[in-house]
Length: 305
Image 1 (cartoon, rainbow, N blue to C red):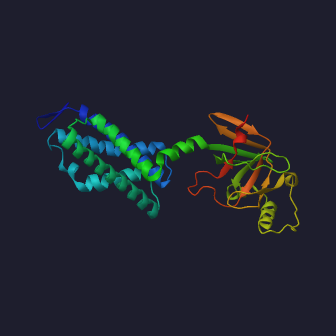
Image 2 (tube, rainbow, N blue to C red):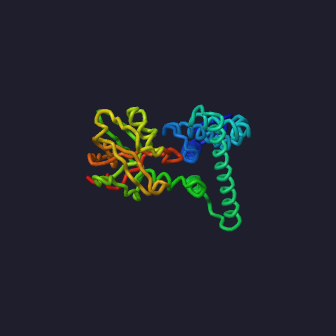
Image 3 (tube, helix red, strand yellow):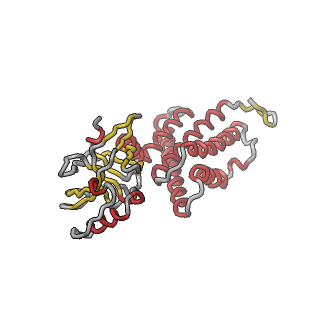
């Protein structure tokens, strides 16, 4: 308890409310990040939410003291512009104007939707039900509404769950070279090498281009242009590794995919590693994920120990 101008103020409610506000604002920033696809550290969500929590603390102190705290707390300039922009800056840092405006737009859109839903629920409750909505219940209601908006509007929840279940870290090793990529488990991938019948992993060529010899890249370009009379001069062990893979997927029928046989494919999941030595890596020259969440496709068979 503190005293301001002989007015006693109990701090338990302001402290409790500010902690709940902190968590609410951190969650709001997380939802905005999921919608925009802009990555940032988890600690930044809590740092940005802390600004909102501190403002909530002063707001509750002002209410408890019947306005004895400075009136700036109630200024629209503060709680509608300064605090949100400060939260966004702390969470996402300096971005381009386009990204910044996108973040701000989604932040205010979701915040206004939440305010409208809270107002509607309060109006219905006061008119028909007359239930007492405590601070704790309002907190859980706020989170439920926030996740509902994120899921119904942009599929935030199921996309995150999907990523947790179906995204894997893979490492491809060959000739003392290695590359680590994020791969999507593609249950529909039944592509195999027609000669050895081993499964094929699809990888965006741009993600591995820097590690491929120039002669191999030139050969891939010639094959993509339909030139099979090209004088193949494959360096090192690539003569044994090089593969041509016919396919009827990836948006093209009777296509030809260029690939190679690595020394190892290591798939990491559930704190375990599965090492595959019988696998082919196929090069795909377009983006596999528009959002950039993954750059490779693995078949379920590579998870077998």
